Image (cartoon, rainbow, N blue to C red):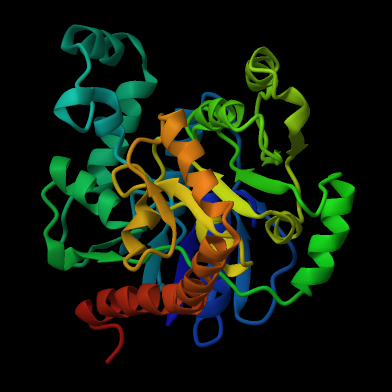
Length: 381
């Protein structure tokens, strides 16, 4: 197949971007992949071809988004399938990486319902609101040849709550992972020394760039409940850390936290850590828990109400938090995994799950959806 791939930033940083890159590399083994993007990482090679989308508008964001949708709609004719990871006007298969705009506007559940007067005031006074809503309505408009791929069942359910898309038009392809190729024991020794973590200390790892949404405040509060135990925390990710530094100082655990910032070598931190913790409040398909498990780092993260990846935990491969805002529950989960025998059992199960949920598996599910679309339109046998 000749595939047009739409993604504004073709980079390995960021969840949707990393997903698109990993899948595109695997699709290119058998197909011709043309990437339409504003930004690229690396050079085009093999069966991957780059097409730079001009970017005359950076702000406001909704104008930039509409420009990308309009420009690509006029330059992706002649492909067997147009596969988009962005809001688009012309596509055959759309990847859904997050909840709906209308769900965020009004609230996706009765408990989340917003004040209708304030919502409609925003609609009438903020140009971005009707602009995003209109674009979303266009890209969830059912057509005979269109298909959608969600990164979790949680996301599929939310889309179908607001838009009349049948189950047979949807596929689910959770994010995958790769098993580490480096020497984990060596990386563990080197990076624990760099982080000043002793052999008898338990190192917790948090990976995420939206600290508030990812639940960092609850994790810092949980760390305070473990202050008398040999536990340290390293925080990997970009964002404003100052409120959380102040919280840690007020709870007298500031000296137990290392702020790594954005890094390129996240696998080294997985190797160094003893326990991965992500009490996220909303995450369609977080990759970091599975990556941690692949590196032999047992994971604690939010249940399927909050995190799409939790749908894949079926045999106790990780500890799932019923309430990610509850510092007592988080601290209890950490204490459970501080037991070496318990931790080894979770390491074994987590690695086995990571072996099954590879990026090759994800790419195969995506490829099947693309082929269905092209076949329905008579472009491949």
